[in-house]
Image (tube, rainbow, N blue to C red; front, side, top):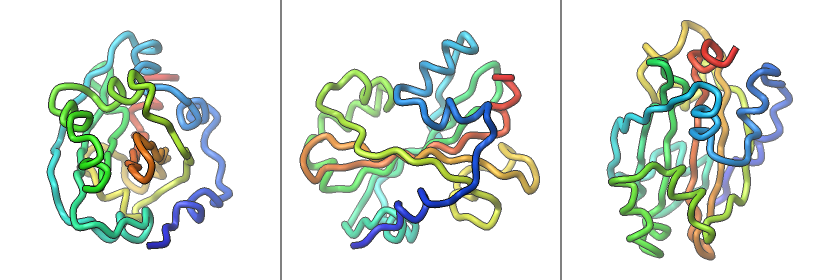
Length: 179
């Protein structure tokens, strides 16, 4: 199935200068948050197998039977900094179940950045607002009315044809604690 990732990357809006280092950071955002704030805490909202939704199919081009959606909030100083959704297609999970089963006890960042076999194939950033599906993935109390948010979308591979996706939506709280 064809994906729409490239069309997201062609949006011409520029992020606020203070967010650009976060949107283009090649390593773990969690480690960057710890370096800047002295701490970071992860809360898993849910992790479940389900049918690929419209966004998974249209934007990512997924056509498989099932995906794992793992949703988290990363906070620092009691302030939510970003929401993240990991999307792992069934065929990707089946290529290495023990790797993904580690998500029960470890953060994705720890797993990805400490596993040499994992490669980031692509990373883009783009803005979203209330008219975008991604804006409605997380609890509305985490954002401000009519706010424009920035998304970092990464595609990782563990083996040939075994790609998984990480969508990180930077929340207004991040701006408050890094300024």
